[in-house]
Length: 247
Image (cartoon, rainbow, N blue to C red; front, top):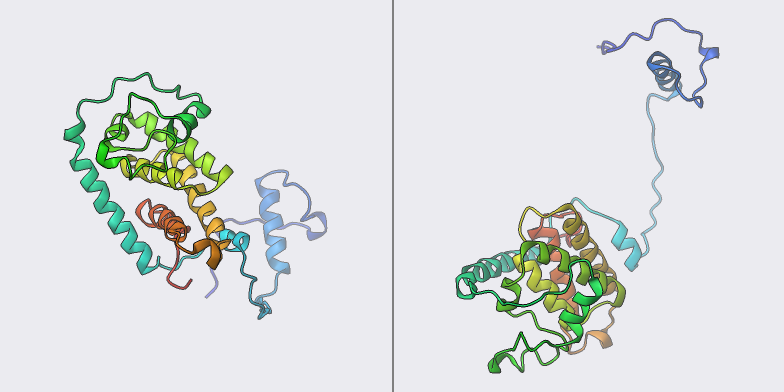
């Protein structure tokens, strides 16, 4: 049974219709559509080329999938969710926030120095945490420090630090800072934060694809880059970025 036309384009001279011309009005546009449809074959087939797409950091970064996320990604997302709950439950312990003149939210360089390059005496670490944060030149992301940040500061600083990640790549202090801020990010995410963490996950995949056995020896870098991808893709529901079951 033929479908009834939603719009009647009426009679017109096909010789007066050019498909490359910008439509002059709605009626002219419908006439172009009618002409284009009439010239199309009823069945269109495409010849598939059985060539496997080359595996590379860039190609895998650009190819998105609708497959469900991998079991490992789901497990890491669940673990992250549990950690967020545990961290949130400890907020009461840090009700007294730190009195400190924070870096300006308009100055990403100040925050870079504060987080990664220069310690401040206003944020002493406990004796028991000294060895844990020994690799930090800047102020480590302790719970007390992270809970002292406002929601606006968290949203802004994580974008600044992701920009550093895109510029210099992976470092352990940078990983710990970004991960700590992700633990306290408020949902729903702002558009800018969502865009930023998507870039984080994409760049993590690019970096992960460049790792070799020598680079990975004795390093947790591969797992931590994969963790960023899992948290962004599954927990923050950017499923097109998550590692897939089929991968």
